[in-house]
Amino acid sequence: MKVIICGAGQVGWQIARQLSGEKNDVTLVDVNADLVRRATDTLDVQGVVGFASYPDVLERAGARDADMIIAATHSDEVNMVACEVAHAIFSVPRKIARLRAQSYLDAIYSDLYRRDHLPIDVVISPEREVAEAALQRLAAPATFDTESFMLGRAQLLGIQLDEDCPVVNTPLRQLSDLFSTLRAIVVGVRREGRLFAPDPGDQLFPEDQIYVFSHSEDVNRTLEIFGKQTKKQERIVIIGGGNVGLGVARALERRTDRVRCKIIEKNRAIAERAADSLERTIVLNGDGMDMDILLEASIDRADAVLAVTDDDKTNLLVSVRAKQAGCPMAIALVNDPTLAPLMGPLDIDAYINPRATTVSSILRHIRHGKVRAIYSLGDSEAEMIEAQVLSTSPLAGRQIRDIEFPEGVLVGALMKGEKVVKPTGDTRIEAGDVIALFTMAKDVREVERLLQVSIDFF
Image (cartoon, rainbow, N blue to C red; front, side, top):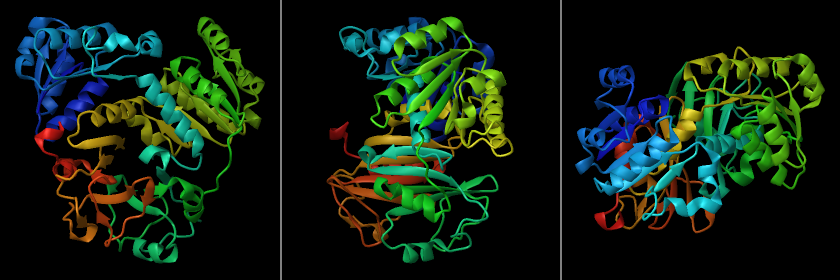
């Protein structure tokens, strides 16, 4: 597949790394020559320096025979025009644009992206993706990472194992015997910085970070088995009233369980906009780094603090201060992945990486086959892929034990009709089933082959 990626920033670079590693023909376009040089020096990609919306620049990037354009520059308008030029002049079949301004995303203007207006096939909103990720973290406070699958009927849980975890030093095979009715499978383990797909004979140890794929009805039981307590989040303080904080507060207001929410926003104009947009949420104009304003927001009685300003260091320091003041849970928005190792020493419970959420969203629209959802784990080390099994797939009609999955691939669950099933070796995969697969990055191409469909389905 030949792909043009406009924008060589964090998201563009990550997508380029992913796609070039899977032997796709990738060209990166950016006006910044240093970013293009960094990409061409470290990745197996071609680079073009110039404005992504200029027809001659796209022509140099090979738009005449490109299969897809992904416009992820820092400018919404450049992304939109790049897709328009790719369609009108070069007839590029698939066009994906990252748009940040909320006005472009309002449902009442959705006609804007029709083929005869602005022909964009997929619009990605980082702010909305991050707000959704934040809500999922709040819904599962005992986890460091979580994502919904299978229409909300299944959940991927990231769990940090402690010394008092009741099932450490127990082989996974034995766990299946001990908890035979538990609809949950350990699909990934990170130990001493390395993520891998475990074998049935592997044991779990304290300090391991594990990924468990669980039926939604079994989430609380799963967390208890791995030594975690579940507590309802009723009082939440949000630091930052921009698009992400505002999106989370709006979603919390729509919930029926009457969560009490407060926002602290430093910029007065943004604080006033947030106050005008919300009904029950209290908005305080002040610096989240100021302990007095944190105490005014009753941080010592809050169940969770969510730090989502546009500054990583502020988010980390506010989270630390909130924990010191007595808040039991802190979630921080962190753009720089190199800061992730600080989460443990700083006692921050979970973090949200906007790059990972945006990359996951874009990958969902790139993968072959009937892919319904993708979640990128760690620094794009692995993926959780949800896809529908079609009759032309090599998986259809076979038992799981008879399928030669790569070493780094595990089946997390199957959905047959509306029922989510815990897979065993005897489970037969049928056409129409929805399958959830944990796969290491190096095995993605083989998983694509297993999910592959004939040309009729594209």
